[in-house]
Image (tube, rainbow, N blue to C red; front, side):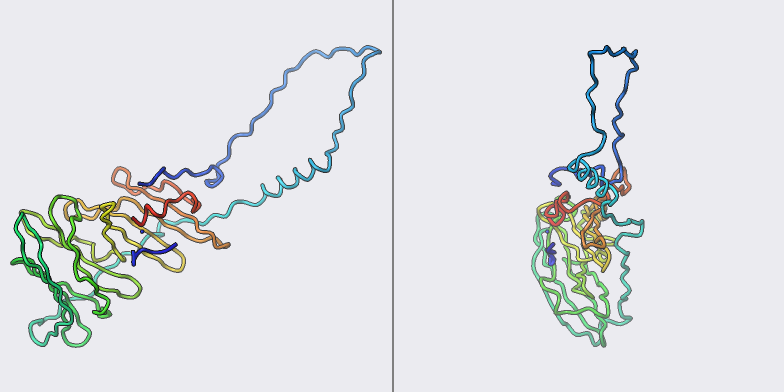
Length: 286
């Protein structure tokens, strides 16, 4: 499965076979009615029915018994099988005006309440391996600390303008570059009474991507034993996790999936050990 990340509705909700959830249908029994025995006459004979299985029926029976003894491969799911929280550890240096070096710069325009405003995004290095980004929109200035392992060369477009929370106002998503194997970003949404405000928790998302098609933020995280895709919406400046798809591999290397959806304000598991054929991966990446 290829990551779109690089960066991919649910056509039919996932249907899980009873055998995949460990459920079984009740055995259908046969009822027998007791009737009075009728005496045989001398001319009546009883057909002899062999109770020994034929070679073909015995072979079929053996195959069925053998397959019944081998359970379908499953994986064990636990509550901690989620994306670990990431907190920004970097802090702004005590003095950022003296000795800072501009390492990257982006600029453009953004329309706010029908009026175009200039926007600039500068990346600075202060001292050795101490970085921060400075976003200027109109008369608002935001300074965002970046991790020590920040790589300026991994910043490609600087910022993206899009209506992330779907309120009719343009918002700004800025790049924080690649750290370890993940790409990080931050988001500022426009509120008419406040101007731009930072979205709490957005900078903790792993490789977030804004989907113009689905109008959601897609996050993807992976480790050697667990892979997760989360899909978020924004309510004002609040991130809301709407649905999550996780998968692990069996001992035989077969991926099995778990899907969780937001139901009445809580994430609820709607399926476990789902086969890949029952997952619309294109939906999750789009």
